[in-house]
Image 1: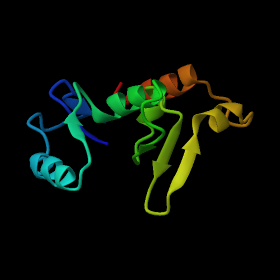
Image 2: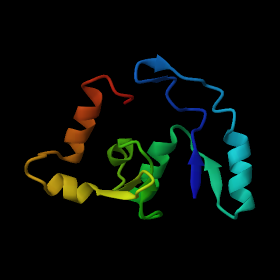
Image 3: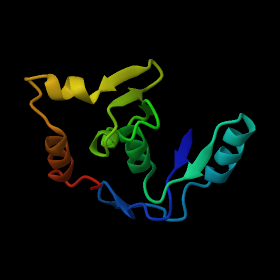
Length: 116
């Protein structure tokens, strides 16, 4: 399953204005994914938020992304990079030296001026 950013995504990310018309290769990517039989659709807003929601509802098992925002939206498992590192939110929350909860991750994202 592939999900691309939709029309309601934030117009400012990391303090910079982003292209609101989307990435120029989005349509070609959706077409290519379809040729290989992968479903691909446009999220209402940011794709990471939609993927996090789908993971929280148990519709998907993990999210493949370099962005940790998916934990803010309810994903519990994230795969990252070419070497396939698997991050589990329950392991992060259970590590005393980290000391974070889901609310703590949200606060951590907001304080330095993150996207949300």
